[in-house]
Image 1 (tube, rainbow, N blue to C red):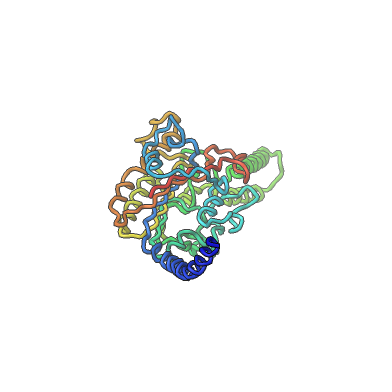
Image 2: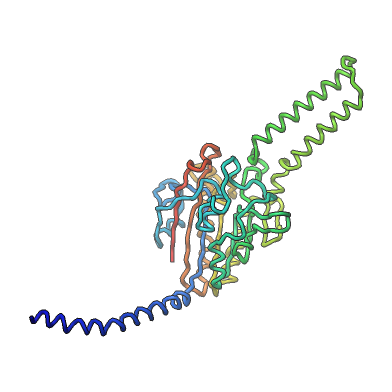
Length: 382
């Protein structure tokens, strides 16, 4: 009885406290968004391109020197259970920017053209896709993208810029609207549609040989054909050659360019200077927005082929040009960029180092949807 009486007396007390508890929870829910909005950290997101999961010291590599990135890992956290949405640039970046699989935004294909091939193409990330930059922009952040985009530029004309970064939540853009390819380096063999280009060159040579044979036969009196016919065939051959060479012969000029917002600043770009230019732009952006809040998405060209490396790092690693490029990337991360973060007014810097898919080996077999290395490294430091 005594126990029952105690339970009976406790029940009204609990009922009396219930409204107070509910009110307290309601106040917590009301205050929570205000507290979240009152503190908006600056965000620096650094992305490496085609870096392998085992190519950093903090992930177990003992032969490549990446002390600065290793320090970021030591001061922050390593998020190891991440996969790229695709083993190619265009679809994987579309998924990263939007948080949706690339086939939902139309940035995936079933044929060989799974990545955008031309700056002048009409494909790109649709304007109605919501990127993380747009979300932060709507919340009062200054948003900048420096580096590689590779999500398209134009729709109907070369000037509409409907797929441009400034139409996807970024206030500022400096970098490469396309991507690095071997075509950007005059000393490298072609990469964009290399097979088709080789076929067209063979066809041109065969047709030229045929016309020369006809002309020689007419000169020797072995073939009865008018000069007008020979000249007409030569003219058609010239038009055929011009029709394909005007595109494939100037890939470097069409694709390998640098832009600042909507203006082209270099055409073609000077590869040896690109890394330092982007670093200066990143430092300048941080200094301009040091009072925050800001998002800076630094999308590095390292370590994508053709592995452009400055002389200071050539031959410094044990792994050839690729290793040299990785070690230069580590230097870029730790140079003036990290020093500039110290002057920001908002002392909480959200720093993330993320890699995209790796397909450095130019093997088409590993560029299929379910093939190729897709494991990612993500380092986060607050």
